[in-house]
Every structure is written in structure tokens, then in C-alpha cells.
Length: 397
Image (cartoon, rainbow, N blue to C red):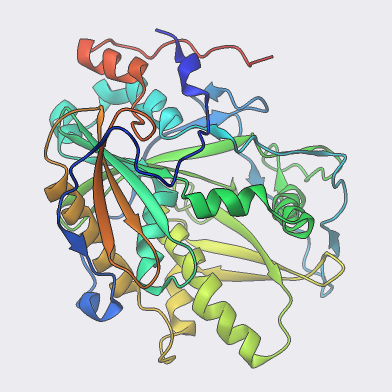
């Protein structure tokens, strides 16, 4: 079986109805925060099942070779003064965003390890498999006012798989991304280069290339309400000095933000950016986010640590703030909605859940391209119950 088919170029998704759209199911789902303000739902502490790495050519490796080690600068009372513009654009290798990876890397890991899962195939048959980033979007939906999303869902051998689809608006925005925004994206990765070393106890080397193909991903198991979850998320680094070396509690998330000068700027930061930081870190069980605040010239002038479990305190008394219970209750309700909607076991059948701010979540049914996302190599291997995943293809020329 050839995995070359996984390197699928992003197709131009027509706004017109696709040929193979099926009659649409009727139900929809409200995202009004007031509907989800009950007690915090059960969320099992995430436990790491394994990991994988993606190299400079975006090739999969079933190990931790891409894991980096947290190595902050000495605290001597001065700002770190990291130049986030250094190396741009001559030492920058951005990932090709036209390549549609879907769940492919996670499915590769799953094929290699499905026989070793606690609870066996029976547990997986009742689980939801997805990326952490997709769950993050669900958590923040009740408070999102700008960006919509689309999630494709397919059920195969009992398991519900969720994979994000780039909306036409997001695609148009990406293709028209202004130079300043491209540089800001680079600066976030450059900050990681200043803060991470390749080996424990060594120092960061910011003189090298910033290659965003490289990634270390943790694979975790959890449960939200009645929904068993198996998901993966990219991890910036591990802290060798952490109180516990047990993942994910040793992991650190690194972020950048512009320098704040007024209470109003801080309030907006707590309401919007901190919500996304909390959702991303809480889901994975990452205990803290270390933020670098940059000045207009692109230099990091200060660092601040935000413990994940304390982020809500910044908005607890803000009537326009966010509430973790609302986020998690909405996510649990959406997962129930998806489980009850996607009942037919067919890897070629896709239920597309679509949402735009101010509207309910709606569903449409499709078969095969362009929305089907479970690759043939995975479906065949699971169907035949092959013991290992196919060979990774060599990088394309």
C-alpha cells in the first residue's frame, strides 16, 4: 500500500454544491454560551499513550527525535532582548500549507499501536479520534466572533474520526496573507528557537534555520463526559527541571504577544488570546504557557509565565470574559451531537459540520471527494487487521 496518496494537494472547494452531496440531515446546534453554563463536566486527566516526530521534510518517525528542551535565559533583571526578525526570510523554511495532511500522521501512529491500546480494539471502537487543534476550536466556539470552521466526520469500525476542512474564507485569507502577518508567524517560531535546546542541559542555538515542517507530537487518551478521546497535539518542548518528568505535566507551551501598555489592552488579551492559550494547554494537560512580549521592533522585552489552571482568574470577574465550564460543556454537547448524527459506519461517507459566528452548527452529508479524509491505506490495513503501517514514502522531489 502506498502512502503517497496522503500528500494530497488542497483542492479548490467550490462554493457551489458538490456533485456528490447527499440529502442534508435537518438538525442544527446552537452555540449560545447561556445554554452551556452548567457545572464543569467530567474531563479525565490526559495520559500520554506515545508520540511521533515529523522531520525537516515532513516525514513521519515513530519516536521523539524532534522533541526539544526548555532552556530559558537567565533571569538577571533585564529583558532577554531576543531579535525575532533575525533570519527572516533567508533562514526560514515554512511548511507547504497547500498539502492536505488531515489525520494522516495520527493514523500512522494508530496503525503502529492499535494492538497495544489498553482496552484493545473494543475501546477504540467507542472512541473519537482527532487533533487537539480541532477540539480547541470547539472549546472556543461559544466566544468566537470572527472565524468559522468546518469539521468532517466519518465513522469507521465504530470509531468516530473528526478532521478539519479549510473553509473557503480561511483559504482566501491564507492565500492573501499580507507580508506583515507572514513575518509575525515566523516570529512565533523564532521565539521557540531562542527558548529551546536540542539536548537537555545544552543551550539554544538561534543561528540555524527555522523549519516549520519539524514537529514533535504527543498522542493522548482522555474522556470528556461520556466520550472517550484519542487525540494528538504538537508540543513545543519539555522542561528537564519540571517537578514531574511524566508527560504531559513536563511539557511547556511557548507563545508570543505584542507588548501591552494599558489596562484595556490587557483586558482584551485576557478575553481573547488567553482563552485560546487556556483551551490549547488544558486539553493536552500542559501545565504552563511561557509568553514572550515583543516590542514594535520585534524584540522580546519581557517573559511571563501563565499557569494553565490560573488563567481563568484573569477573567473571573469580567462580565464579558469567558468561562471554562461553557467551553467544555459546549464541546461535550457537540461530541454528543456528532455521535448521534454520524450513525452509518462507512469511511467514504462524510458528515460535514459547519459553523459561522452568529449562526448554529449545521450538517451536510457527502460521499467521497472532496471531503472524504480517511486514506485508503488506513482503511485497508484496519480492515485486514495488518500488524504494521505502510512504509513512509521518500520526500517528493
